[in-house]
Amino acid sequence: MTDSGTRVERAGQPAARPADLSGVLLDRMSRACRPNLFDVVADPQLLIALILANLTSPVLWELGERIAARREPGAPGPSLDDVMLGIQSYTDQHLFHISPLGVAETWGLLDLDEERERLGKAVVDYAVGEIVENLHARADLGTLTTRQDIFAIIDSGRFPEYHYSNIDIIRAYPRLLGRRKHRPIGVTTCADEAVLMASLCAVLHGARVADTLILGAPVHYTVLISHAGEACWLNGKHEAFTENGWRRFVANQDSAGIQRAVDTRMACDRIIAPMGACVIPDAWSAIPRPELDTVCTRLDDFFTTTLDWVAAIRGHPPRFIENPLTGFDWDRLDTPSDALSARALLRGLAREYPGSIFEAALYAARDLGVARPEVYLRAGARGHLVRARAARVTTIEDALDVLRRIDGNRSAVACSHCIALPDEVLKFDTGDSVDRAFLLCTIAALATALPGDLRNQREILITPDGAFVRLGPTCIRMNDLATGRIPANPIQHIAASG
Image 1 (tube, helix red, strand yellow):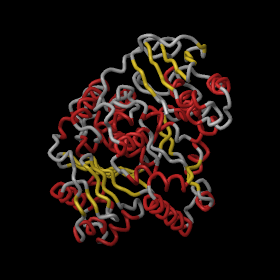
Image 2 (cartoon, helix red, strand yellow; image 1 turned 60 degrees about the horizontal axis):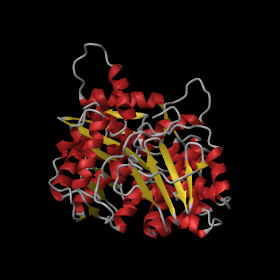
Image 3 (spheres, helix red, strand yellow; image 1 turned 30 degrees about the vertical axis):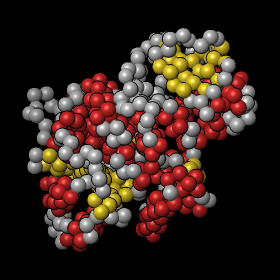
Image 4 (spheres, one colour; image 1 turned 135 degrees about the vertical axis):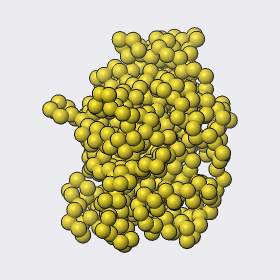
């Protein structure tokens, strides 16, 4: 980046197939950019896409180095237990877990009817029902805090805009926390924590990416990783059990007692693995039958009994759906040695398996080198903050005033080939010229008071020196918001007409 925060790196060749990406797959890539709670209920593997996206960020590898540096000098190579307990300890000390009301105050409220229209009534109503049941259980036990009480919000037809973030966005949150003595390095939800701890395990070579299982339900997600005869279950950033530690914890319990010990920590209605997911209530599995049998055995071995949801899988075998990654060599995901090689690997895999989690991971990372970068405009247009700003825009000058009020000129993300979405630019109050270009282009699309030729003829042009936005006949340079000529030879052209 230059001093003004403009990007100088070329986006590179498209990572996946070109403009023939189908509407269904475009929807999936759009959800991968910034998946909310309901997106992940509909498509559980978006959490795996976030794990892979994290591997492409230098921030993740830097955190891995910090955790590794805490080991005693000259200590032998760490076991899986050592790696996972080190990750859990570090994240517990340095991450802030956001409450439901904190989410609402930060990002706003989703309209549940809009979510039903977008994802289907069954998906949204199931998730809300599970969460309401959990809230009632907490209230009955006297453990529901005022920051968790969202009954009134749900009764009004709204829901906190829980979305799950890549590591760059997690690291941007402290900008919102002001000056404080012990400012965290990031802000997370339980799903973020499961994803981040699995990502850190991968860069610390504690286990293969394929050894990751995310266990949970819309209410709460956890991660279990097993490798080479060791296993560790991380129940958010506050609690971790090695296999031996869990056996000691439940040593005097019968099967019913062990089930209660698990139930007090999580409900589990889905098992999410890199190869696919198994959704127990819907009785379907993209994890092939032999691999699902192996997963169930892993769970029996760790928890020392057959839990009721594992018994449900065995007693009522799911419908196995086609999995295009059957036979994939998952060892290929363990070859990267840094963020750059991880990105190169995922770009190659996205070309091999278009529409897969590998391609979704690039969108989750907000990589500008994806096949259809205009998807970021689609994803960004769902943001509450940008929609609210656009509702007050009646002229181009109004739209430019929104950009003028943004204080920072550097992107919230660490990679020069990635972007922050419009709501993130507005909330974190910073963005470089490319981030601002996507913000302006999104505002123009949403501002219904603008003339049709401006709204329907939009494009972003990225050059080595920054970015430009063309709205109808007007071309605006993002570095200084001056109007001028359309650049002759942009290194990337993102059309957003219509």
